[in-house]
Length: 188
Image (tube, rainbow, N blue to C red; front, side, top):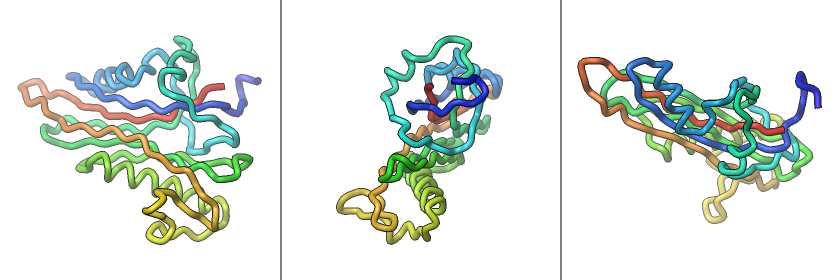
């Protein structure tokens, strides 16, 4: 494995939120809650490598070494506005053929609940995957409610979302920042 180029073999998902008088401080607290504060994070785009195995959070966190350069796809949003709802989510779409790559999507916005932002993140990831397969994607026709799965050109596609939504509740003289994040963290 070269440090300059490697294909991740595993991925895990985490999320967190933090409140602090400073925006950067709230981001650090969100990283702490997510368990990835000791990493040198490098943001990458939205490709889930072929054969990349999804592992649980506990396993993933145990594999991290403090100070390591760690690649991730991250959705992040911050606000200092009292009462504002902030949400972040990572969506996942895996093709039926695991020799192909899949997609991760990152969504961050205000005024949404967990279900809304999770659905948006899943839909985007499925749409990106369909486009990569050269297929038209109609989210209203592709979703099989009975089986809770996407069908794109006859292929069953595994989709999931990892949302984190919080409301800024701290009202005080010293304005506080809220940061919410969701991340897909890659492992070698």
